[in-house]
Image (tube, rainbow, N blue to C red; front, top):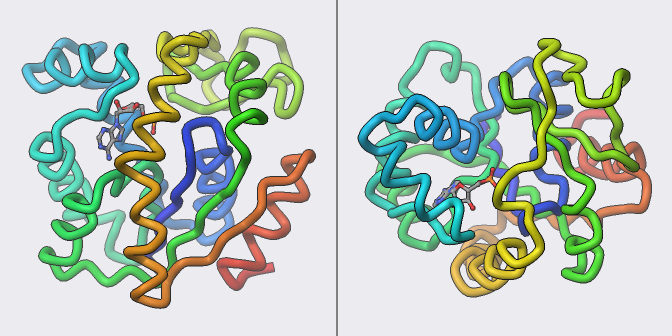
Length: 211
Ligand code: AMP
């Protein structure tokens, strides 16, 4: 099964994509994580991407489409994959269609902006493996340490309040139009984000068709 997870930054799409990835044993492909890793390693595109990411803007379609094309050609994607954070523009969605990638469903995790502003302040990510936590909603077992790999969890630079506002604006301008794009293809399923992560997960699994 090939799935796309769509949602504003901080809506919880990564957390939900992770559960579905574990449940279906198919990889979760986060373009944000790939870009952060490239930025950390100082690769040519990583350096370019970092400036846009730190400002809450999107990285160019050209760079991101190139990354995705390479990633989904890998062996572990043969049985299916979950795209987490891609596409983020109509041009990226069109590029995916042009690659003849069949998408089964697009799961939108919907959360109001006000709630998102509140949530992102508490988000922590692992500096090693990129796993995501929240001090209140999804704490790691030991504070500041990743459950999965034992590395440190940190606050992302782009989770600072002023950058969050820019990211939300970018989302509404550039990414939200994808809802219409995929609704027109009959693939969009909207999941309303709940107060409890576990409740959102139940709805997400039902939307994907596994329970
Ligand atoms: P995320 O971890 O998905 O919130 O992504 C973090 C940042 O990486 C975004 O704010 C963008 O700057 C960049 N990014 C990730 N995925 C994409 C994409 N598909 N297109 C453009 N920029 C992206």
